[in-house]
Image 1 (cartoon, helix red, strand yellow):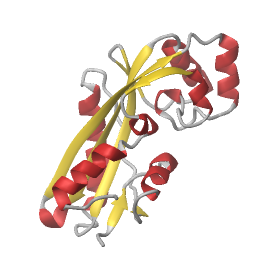
Image 2 (cartoon, one colour):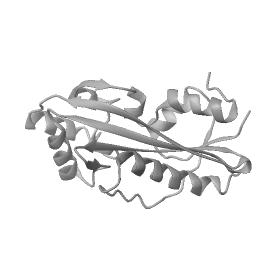
Image 3 (tube, rainbow, N blue to C red):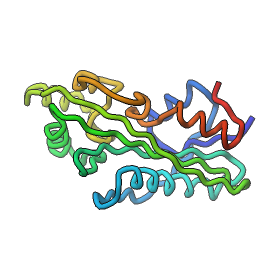
Image 4 (cartoon, helix red, strand yellow):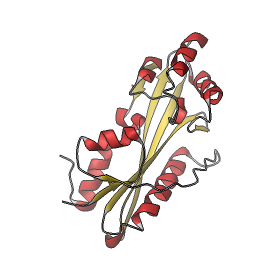
Length: 191
């Protein structure tokens, strides 16, 4: 069996991947700069690359998987909120509107000179939320450490009217697409 490393501290990514394979978690801090002048898919793939290459250099024989997720609303990139006020402003900007969720991922096996990048895109429409509903959601503290200030897999599901695309992409790891890439790159299936 291949030595597989998830280069992420995200509990959601760990949970998704744990349903399929054994892996270890190794991560390194990077400077997560988000620049609205770049496309969201370029940004998430670049951040995933930076997270993954930092770990892959120390683990050349392992398959290293890294990912980054951002919310995009009309050209504005929404990462993790700084605090409750920032989260409130993000959710207010999303209410009643459709936004896109991008997850970029990088797969490495440096001993085979493999450096692979890809991304997935999904759309999410929020209900036209009242200020009271937004405050109730913020009271859950679920917004912390979440791109766009919400988690669709938890109480944030109450904010969502509809989605188009890969649900797991919105959570933070488009596992179906990643599986297809692992098969193509390494003949390794998560089945």
